[in-house]
Length: 249
Ligand code: SF4
Image 1 (cartoon, rainbow, N blue to C red):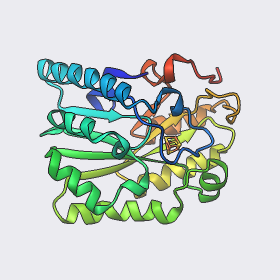
Image 2: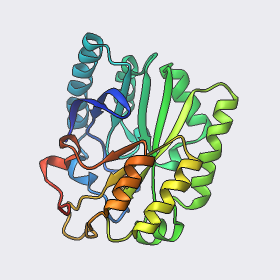
Image 3: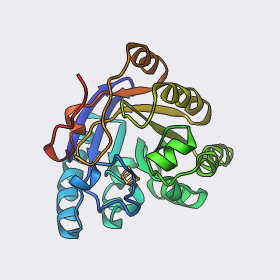
């Protein structure tokens, strides 16, 4: 659901902007629902996002938000550049959080964005989803092999050694038939070693052709709540295009 949302959870008090994006240029992941909210109509993208950003700037100033997250159901670098420019007041001197596919996360792209925005800290979320490369590449069709996973993980050190306050977090997908629970568990531990933060996201099925959701054991739920930085069990703002996904009870 696009819009501005006030969040107060384990990550602290945050303002979350969910923007309208262009269709993801990669667009091949087998579980991805984001096309439902995306459009090829640039005027709609620019119009909707301008309203969201103006509203967010007013709220952030009035209510003193220090942490801002911007999501567009794809990669931040695929937003029209006008939108990226309009976001500048929300990023300057703030903890600013975005999401990207790994191929957009390079030393030059990150430092250019950082230098342009001047944030207190830049957090980039990348959806590696599962540590097991075969599941990620063959079943989820993420198109982000382990060579990318380790490259992005190492990039954190390079950026920090040059004085850039950048953190790279990853999403971890669970509750989907394609990822057995032991592989979710393995991912949780590996991702904690390789990245600065882990956000576990429970799968919801929006498209009849997509994989099935599966129940989540109490053991896994407890583990995720204990070791992930945030567990997204599915809040109102994460409902895509006003459709309830089918999640197990
Ligand atoms: S990279 Fe993200 S937005 Fe693109 S198809 Fe995969 S899950 Fe969807």
